[in-house]
Picture: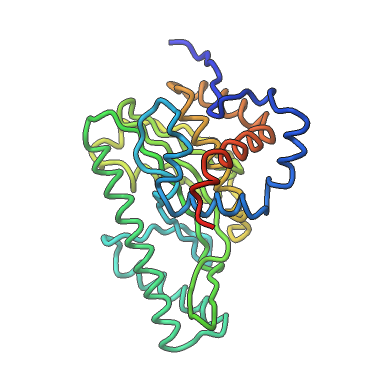
Length: 293
């Protein structure tokens, strides 16, 4: 088996093909431009937009960046995945942390209890759908490639709209995961390369792979160190874009070893700015007419 790899771009063009005029035109779209924000929002909440982006990639896959496993960080930076099977002790602990965070924002009493209950119910429901899909598919021997997003949310980042009493996480972060049930391989890409959660690859195995098959799976990832400042995870507006880019790159490049994984990752990272421009050009061409206003 050779570790050589032929780099394939999922955007129809090589990073070296971008003209200077295109660079100038795309420079303003790279970060907080409204079109970029609309693309991110669409990818996080609707499966069909991911399918539009990858319909030309000759790798059938299920899931999308709207398939999410929510990982909560408590006030001590410890990670929690809430599921219907979670212990009552864990749920009560998270409930207490959330109520305290809401109290710190001026929401107290029964109102904070109701809001915390609502957030926990939402997270549990989202995680149940994602884990059920992944575990069911990894239990089978069918040739499937599952795409999903790990949504890392800090309880300290809970925000409240006082007029509507809507609660959400003000800041978050995302990783992209590709699970290949044919080759029993998992690709996990953290856009920053830093381990915001210790042993996150073990968490992926425990939560997303059928228990009797976890020992069969290999995980290729780019996580290289621990970051203690948990609440300082980058805003997920841009990391959603990077998850889409790296997800599309790894769908387009067949990976059979960690060496190949690292070569493709380094290639994409070396051309990071150009890949961002290619992605935005591709996303605008494919999604602009179908995105909600």
